[in-house]
Length: 181
Image (tube, rainbow, N blue to C red; front, side, top):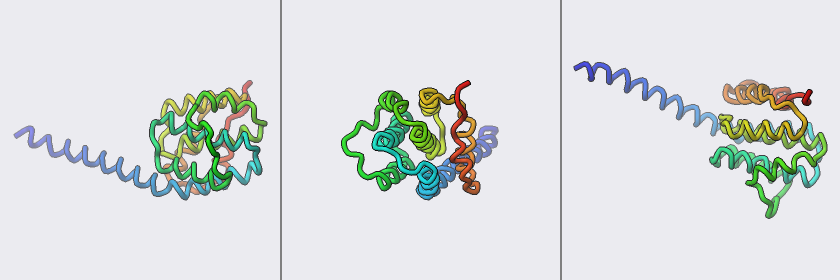
């Protein structure tokens, strides 16, 4: 009888956890496409026009995030579509090589580097997670661009997205840390 008595609360707790996880994923997937539109609008408005190499690096940033998570989340597809709507079809470029992405980002000018880093930060958080491999990629890219590998502002942006906070440009534009000391 003690198994029956303990099984009910354990089963109820398990159901609560699974329900929470499913509802969280449903919310992230429902908010994702409109969040991508708004976040990219802010990033595009701040950056203005960027060169061909920065456009390619933006596609590589999203591709690298997909490779690092080993998950083609629907929100990442929406981000890739937003980039394609803005810049057109990238053609036959290598998008899934993280090392190539890191090797090419430092060639860009400062404004274009910030643009690409913001796209990478967005690609890292838009699935609701910031996995270890994404954190490492973000930190490596920040260091390549001469910035502190501090992700506190990226975590703040992720939290604002997950909680559905009012969209503030400062959260998106302030996601990058300061220069290395």
